[in-house]
Image (cartoon, rainbow, N blue to C red; front, side):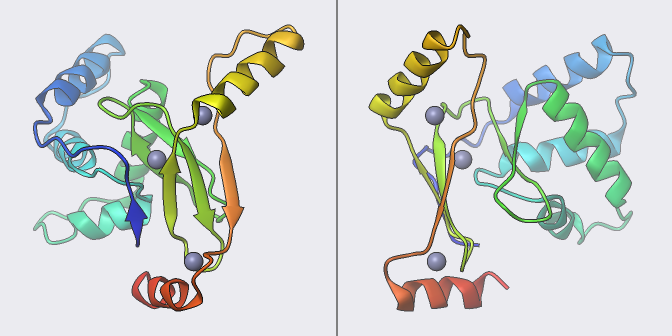
Length: 163
Ligand SMILES: [Zn+2]
Ligand SMILES: [Zn+2]
Ligand SMILES: [Zn+2]
């Protein structure tokens, strides 16, 4: 899947792994080898992924990791505030991890699935202003803009290569 990330890749996952295992301990959840393996993989992915694509990346292992295990870890990580869940207009969810990634919004091509990240302080401020005027303090937001790539050949190329 074509994916334009505006953030730098960091290879060291130890901070995330520590946070994750501390969360499991705190919640009385089991720290299993499989859970740690899946977590390590998740923290090494620096773009938007799905449960499906994650399982795909883990499939060359001898002991196969079940969909159920993957879904369980994803939901624990969302609860723990380590992963953000996105609805990009498909019948499945996208995920990306939060630590080391600053807040940003997304533009998604409904034809080829290209995901572009952006951050515009003016838009952020307008949202804070709208919330304030309606009597809210913002705890978070998820802004997804849907559209179609302006360049048809690029879009067709992405479409072909994301399948
Ligand atoms: Zn935003
Ligand atoms: Zn993103
Ligand atoms: Zn496109």
